[in-house]
Image (cartoon, rainbow, N blue to C red; front, side, top):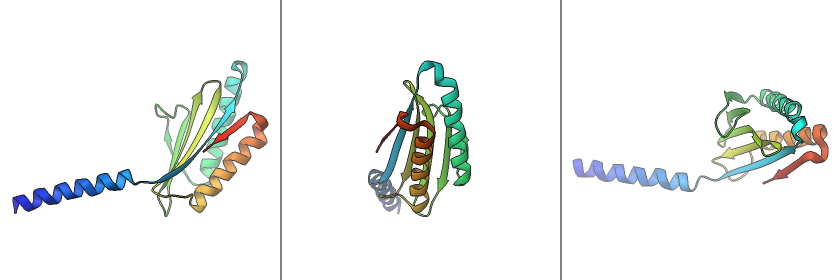
Amino acid sequence: MKRLLGRLKRLLVLLIAFQLACDLGVDVTYRVSMQPAEADSITRLGVEIAGALAQGYALDARGTTDPCSLATYYATTSEGWLDFCVTHATNAVQFHLSEYRTGSWSSKGDRLRTDLRDTLTAQFGSRVIGSR
């Protein structure tokens, strides 16, 4: 019996490792470039935009973390979960949106991604650079 439990534990560990290794996700990053003199105002406006979008999409605030020095939000979806991070980058404010445990955007994640891009572009114009 002890031997069987040991094998089952190893099998469980392997299955979890396999699931984590195959855990697909999608993400997008937008950067708003700025000059040092503009840092305070652009940072403040960027955090306000992120907060308004997070509230509109019912994302929960997690405060700040090391990789997300300005704000962090998250929500679960029917397909997985969304993670929205706002941080400083070199001469920029960076917005990173990820959706985990899915190979494509959920409807909520896709709408948030589009609204984030459109809102940043409307506010900051050509300063916005996006990447996938």
